[in-house]
Image (cartoon, rainbow, N blue to C red; front, side, top):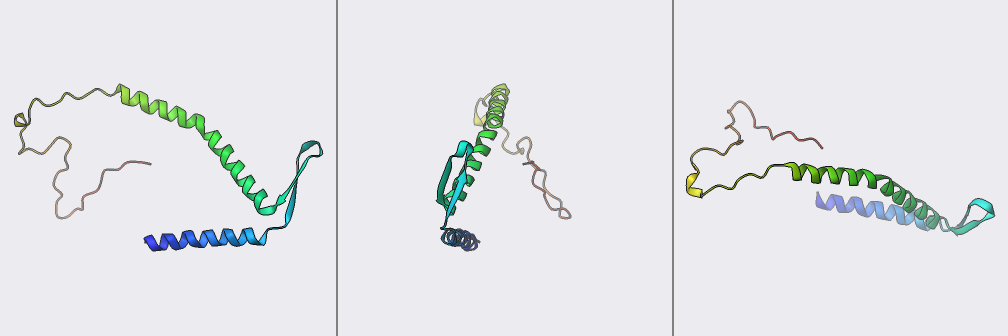
Length: 116
């Protein structure tokens, strides 16, 4: 699987490299007030892609901050569990709280569900 992933990455790289070699002619980008920018087409496409990434990331920053502050508040609101007095005080023969019950031979154990 690891080699297949590297093969896919190499194919994508060589495809983009061939695209860059095939688009070396100059392109003109016209801005407002008669200004223009002449550059190889690959550079124009790369610049447009990078600008799109920057705009996308900047658009997500407020939401990331909101989720990060909500996560910090949730962690701060959790009560702290008291530490056990000593290991001898625990009953080591009993399963810990929240442990899975042994699966019957007719059913397969399912991992706990958690969403993305």
